[in-house]
Length: 469
Ligand code: BGP
Image (cartoon, rainbow, N blue to C red):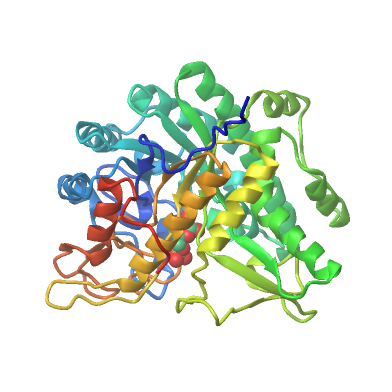
């Protein structure tokens, strides 16, 4: 008898080719139809660029934007629901009808166009009222409020939504606590508060995984995790250990808790070494054991190479792992914002995740290339983005051939949107939106060259991609 492998040779026919956005970065209408103010709204008001009051006005361009998605041929669309559009204060007695209606329209339009909704429950935009009531995620009450919000979404939209993402990039929220609006009277207390909030976010998700399985047995749910490929600059054991620590503490931690149902030992050690004690309750353990994710959403953009440097202490890593600096590999294409284009890094990352959690279904929830762009005669010829997409999709197929169970690819972003730190200067979209940081212009939409390239990818199930370019 001959051994026959059952590994796939290519993208499966039901592969979900999608695209991605998040509410505050596209919707605008920040104070319309009863929506409450969020931490993201306040944070953007302080930015030197534009704020979220208009963003790219997706709220008022819904039909047009979904027509563009349908023409592109999208099979899935990953977007987030704004908590404060459903519950303006985060925990109101009743949901806000107009907010509920907006997402009903959005989801119905997607379904009419045979586009699978992939819904993020919480993407960086905590209702500000919860910060004012009890300092947001630092308080156990936030677990209950998130649970109730998620339950409301399952009841409202669960008949049409099969894929749910619980929290976007929790490790970023834990490492940059201002993203969650956390206030500390004493700055030295910030790390303690931030880790407590990290714990509550883990707990809230565990409870919501379980709830989703109870209420919506056919639906699948998982976290949207930030995971970059982390490589050591030098190849001494010391460097490799440091690189592994970074990978564990920034990338794997969210996956480990979601799939193994406990705080990993490397994180417990970090808490102990930093004299951080968490408030836990007996019942929590059962919640963690019984609430596990079905798949992993991965936000993967690029590879980072780290070099040991005692003096270096990049802001995001502060308090977690200091003493490393990021080094650029000039042999490959690098964007202005220190993102490298390293497609093999994606294949490697997927292999590492698959090694740790064999055969876990993976949805690429974000992956994209930022550029400063201008409209020239109604066109944007974004050749670097095409190169990025082509080569990453090529390597994605290689990962599938390796046996990694990737079921969906949702590049960031469907249309230009406001970047978390760089406003409209840093564009990722397949569709250009004609506005800049200072002038909202007419907010007209123009498909870029990458839109037409990706359309062909979807139409041919990536048969048009047969070499790296
Ligand atoms: C991820 C976020 C997105 C998006 C993206 C690009 O971390 O989930 O919301 O913003 O990164 O980052 P930036 O906007 O900083 O360019």
